[in-house]
Image 1 (cartoon, rainbow, N blue to C red):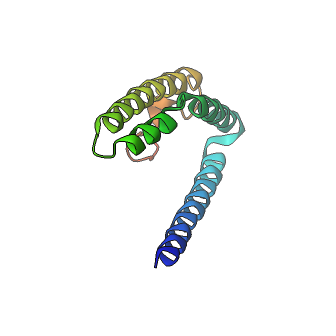
Image 2 (cartoon, rainbow, N blue to C red):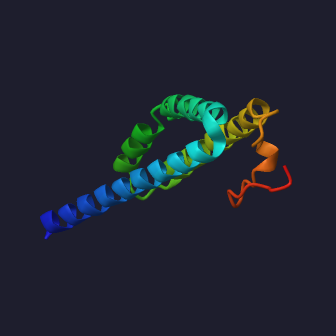
Length: 126
C-alpha cells in the first residue's frame, strides 16, 4: 500500500511538473511573438536575474523548518515563522521585479503601463 501511494504521488508530481513546463513554453512563445526581440530580451534577462536571486533567497529555511518539525511535530511555530519569512522575501522580490519592469520598459511600445497585470491583455490605447 505504501509503495503504491508513493508511486502515485510521484506520478502526480511529475505530471504536474511536465504540465507546468509546457505552460511556461507556450507563454514564452506567445510573449516572444508579441513583445518582439528588444522587450522580450529584457523580460528574459529579468526572469534570469529573479531565478538566480530566488535560488539564494531560501537561505536554508526549508531545511531548518523540516528539522524543527521533525523534533516536535506538534509545534507549528517553525512553520509559521518560515511562512512569514518566505512571505516577506516574496513581497520584497515582487516589488523589486515590478519596479525593474517599469523602469526597463519605459519608451517601449509595450511598456509596463500599457499591459494589464491582472488579465495579461494589452491596452489598445497605445
